[in-house]
Length: 470
Image 1 (spheres, rainbow, N blue to C red):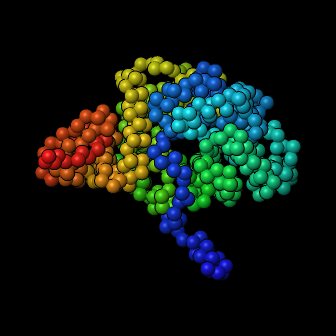
Image 2: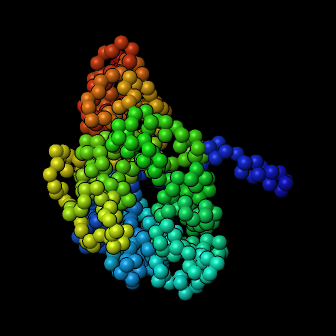
Image 3: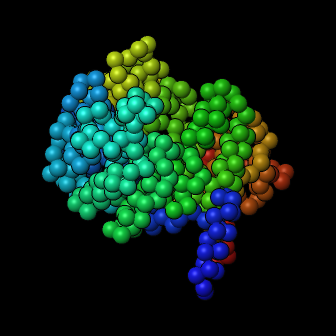
């Protein structure tokens, strides 16, 4: 093939709609994995790395395959900027969390249990006393020579500067080479030129092709050459929260899923969540049973399921406004700093009053994590949406891989619903309930599969092979 032919092929490829192109191939270990976020100051009383290492057996028992750690970078010395999301030094760990030796021990303990470790990196902005300030050209300036501030009123690095790019990429390589970090969650990734992430990916691939990049953004181009995974924010905000909280039709979930898969490259991967540190707790927004139904949906769909520490037993941060965003970003008039929160307040250990016991919630999440890992149809099968007779309240879909099929039916309303799913009942009788391993005997129905579900109830049933003559 001539050089001219290659250039023409590249040009034609670039002109193709993103949805008609293929996503970059992700490391094999990502398939079947589920993610668990550890926000250090909320995870333990001390908020330190050794506490995470000590609780590694707990995380392994839960079944998580990936730990995503909140930012560890050295924070500002200025009290008003004392935030994990305003770094002073991208190459150093803040003493609040521990030492480099502590981080090494954490990663080793995770890897011994087959758990991958991701760091949260914040390059969109930095503290005003970041060590990069010694090189003024690393920052954006206005015509008067003043440093430009970003959306959160913090200095913005200048990604048009090649030296700045190399400096930040070298920090990623440092954590991969010297600590064997498995990936990075890229904060406000859409606020940074995609060309930077593509450049970073190329440099990371030279060191290890097993490192993943998670974009905190929803740009369809992200997964062509840079990222392995995107947060599914449109799915969370517009269908899921709107359906669960505002009574919008459940059919909107399917519409948004189809829209995203049409816009993003073929094979793109999405992070499905109903809790994270930037959002109100799902147990507050959706109620106890609603929060569990939303979690089941996230684990039954394609992509990567995600759980925020404490979600697995319905934690609500003690002593905070129940409408607070996550665990550290309270919605109060004129807070002293947007990231202010009491240091060292741990997630409660099965505390509080609840209609569903924290132990029962934990067992459900534990089952969700493990079935996601064990069932090929769930972690790598196709999604086939199936119509039902109650589309305003109920979603139904198949996950299918080879000869394996798993049928999910979820009532996303706060009232009991009955109806039928447009599948032949004779082909799906019986089903094995993957939540409790019991057999679901589907009643004989004229043609289709009937269901009767209480408020926020669900079925995750695996098709059982038919009996045969000996």
